[in-house]
Length: 140
Image (cartoon, rainbow, N blue to C red; front, top):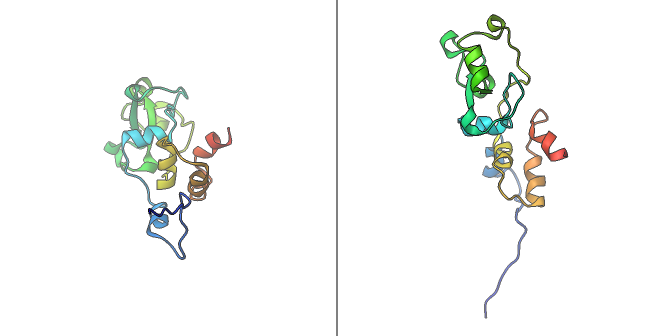
């Protein structure tokens, strides 16, 4: 005879689990993750594009001391990135349509468009910061 145990997709444990601690860590900064965070929208013209038409733009260019980190990079279309070139926003007369921020691991998991069960989504949502652009999509 074979015994089986049915459990919920998320099992609660007392205290802080290692998985919960990781939810607050930022994912690696890659173009793929950046484009997902920014919903494939150019930070300058507001249009959406496929991955191959997008670039990573440093709000403060690295040549001017800007770091390559989440809070200094945005998604830009090729045209806008070329127009901004290696300049500060005030030098080129361009403005950001949204503010760059550091996503956490829970947001990255949601943005990966995996098949997330309702109960799993509720768990992941509990780790989302209020400024996450994912909230807009989850409300729709």
